[in-house]
Length: 206
Image (cartoon, rainbow, N blue to C red):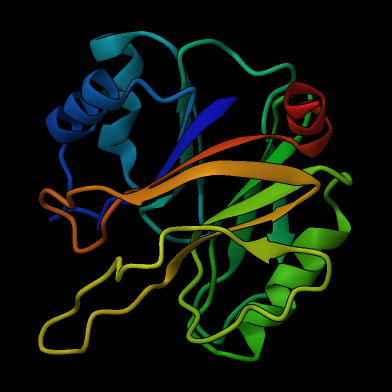
């Protein structure tokens, strides 16, 4: 069973390195995925050890990042996805052996972000998950994938109604737990899921 946390940090004014370190020490994830991570977040290995990788969005001061207690089997793959009107986007794909995880921060356009999901899904193995800030309202409409993330709102912006835009989609996997964690200084709650390959789950249940 792999414990994964995803957190949109809120660049510059959001979650600090101290808050991320506290989260890691408290929750002990096998993999922490981050969105809107800035240059400062590269301090994580100095503070708490482990493996860190970062992929800035083209032309931006922030991007996607990952931390894990040990290095993954292969360096994360950074894949361009269909760009938005103002921001070029990428996905960071992490190979965990039994399955792969795509870390995402999708565009706000509700047609575009679904098209980005379909592009990412084509590059993933059979057993896979897409986790992160989807900026998406309503069903994801991604064939073969199931939404297993926590059902409570994960994001608040000003006086806007709280929204569930931080998601986890899985294919060929089993999710045994999903929870939205306290948000600290970010405007997003981290989301936590426990995942394993569906075949492993079926053998354990037999």
